[in-house]
Image (tube, rainbow, N blue to C red; front, side, top):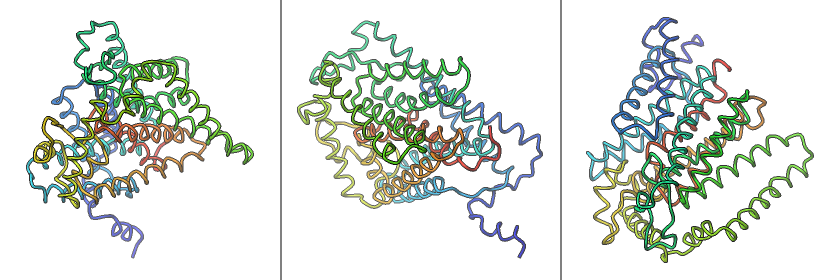
Length: 438
């Protein structure tokens, strides 16, 4: 049997439809800039789009990926994409067996729309890696403008920001900025993955103007994240920037003697811990927020989350294998049956717990498989003497920050945050498979 016949038989059945549309070079040449423009606008405008505008861009991204895939032959499925297909399969089963299938179908459609953005970004970066810097520039533009708008609120009247000051919390009276997103925790969740991207852009980009833009974005997004006074955001910020520093050290010291390579990372970590301890003990706002984090049920915000976690755990106990179905609509339909009085919630306030609630144990296992594949792909690029190694570091750091914040919050499931995560995954999955280099 000819080699071409063998390869066609090895293609997964799900990909047989790709390449069926015979398109000329001129058509393919137009698809690349069109995809790039749509994704640039989408990533740059995340904090500012209405839900209708965002839905239109998500739909456009998915349809354009279908058109582009029809016009080009299928490629091999990488491990990150494979795990995403497994997660999608579990989500379909969870929807089918859900007690509220109509509500779960809405969540499934949202997941499909996000996967369309991932697929288009992956295909664009596979086709030409130069688009990564352009998409990153769009993402940082949105973060810079959001930070400026948020920091301006420091000079606004305290009455305007009072609705985010909990009088029952240990941090009562703290002024928390929220920018264009209307929620301090959401603003922190949106900004914190941008910090490692800005740091890497500062190292990766050439030219004074580009580096000035990246540096200003890094400083302002860091300051804005701090002034959100989001405890999860602060922890995510520390995690993300720590991963950037450590991975850059590992990459830059590969030729050093073994003993120095082993001693330098823990030394830097120790210095970082000392700085954090000094900040936590000497600066009153930081000390107050950390005290509230350690106060357990003594803090109203902690008490609320703990009660929601117990209710969500009961939901997992009753639906352990396929959950209640994906999406917040399914959660809002089932949660009232388990909630404690006066503790209404829109989510489980923990990403791992939310996944268990929505897709059960198989869904959580599949998500851990996805995380393992992403980390392995990012770490594998550290030893490459190519620009994509820095992109891999930025993605791993961004994912780390979102994971840390996601332990006690579900801000990740908001599109303003989640789409940044899909951008990071698409970047990692496309590494090593580019048809053209920048």
